[in-house]
Image (cartoon, helix red, strand yellow):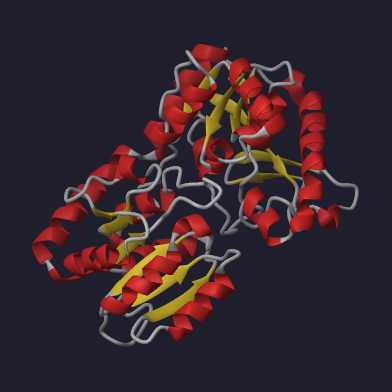
Length: 389
């Protein structure tokens, strides 16, 4: 029996094997291949192939600007931060919409259904193509850019979608406001519990000193709240290891250099293969996310799930979808956004209270198992079959 053909579209995706770009669209697609014949369609990048098989998944990359070396809107990172970094990139946005529409129009008859990740641009463009689709809201595509024509186009996207999902409860509430009367189930992305685990720990991976390690992994952007974590480390006798790149890298490095007591190491971007050792070799994971000035906030925080699967206790903030994953005193500790003293207090509790630490590690690992990609993919596959096929 031939499988139904599913087209998956997104704008954040690994550009090549070992690329540190977020891979949740790839992981979800991989775990739905037993149900569908899947092709992933994502924007081109000057260093990426136009078509390839990546970890067993068919990938097609569409061009959106005549001069291919200028196709820099989507990587590394995400569209909004790329525009903040260089304002002129906003001129590429109409070309991205048009490039995606042209490619989708040419491919539409090859597929039975589509899964659009992010309302902008994927969901909006799908609303102009005759192909049944579901759309998933991930974060800034829901919380920001809600004025003028974009608001109208978002509503069109939601109205025409066969199903709407969100990766967290706060995002689902916002989507329900945009699409009155529509059901918006919360179906998050997940974690590959076989890829991460405490067995990958290496002692003294970060320093020859016998010192506890606080780990942050993520994009160095406003909503991640790293500046408050660095400030909090002035009160914590531990080494802070920061993994990631982003527009605030230089500012954060300057802040860390001026800190009197905080010990901070920046490792830059790391591959997913390298991350499994990095997670397992730390002692506590910090996720001090905040609501950005433009309203952008954390969708779910998949790095939190990866840390949990690696056997790490988590100290996080009550921001966005994080509260959906972290239950205070059960599988992690929570602080208010930007509460530097509270962040420091939670880190110190985890590092000094062995009983609490053991409880949080047990709870966090159980949480990670509940979000395993095999389980999340089955939920998405069921929804797609029910609504689109």
